[in-house]
Length: 151
Image (cartoon, rainbow, N blue to C red; front, top):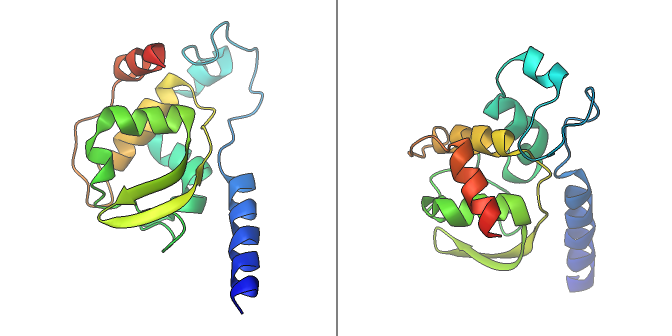
């Protein structure tokens, strides 16, 4: 029974990891710096939507309600982990594997680095900080740039 459960969890984790992340695809000419510049098509489309990025990039693991998947992916709803903004931004940029404690519960899984531009990271984290029962100031592009520069 334990082998079946382990195989099921492993297969689910592989599926989720394969579906996590992603980027907006080829929407025009590539910017000189892929982390800080929008293409002409993106700039014409208007501001970056944190909610849209969340729905495309984060929802598979953290779920539409931010509750995560019990014993697999941690919640971002009312999360004590995201109180450390630098750690949160770093994790989005670099990813993380291994043990993580959120709201007193241990998780041991993988979050792959997210191939998002600084503007997208700022937008999606601002969305997370202002939803799911969280509270926090907006994340700025300059804040993300400063943390990325230290990595």
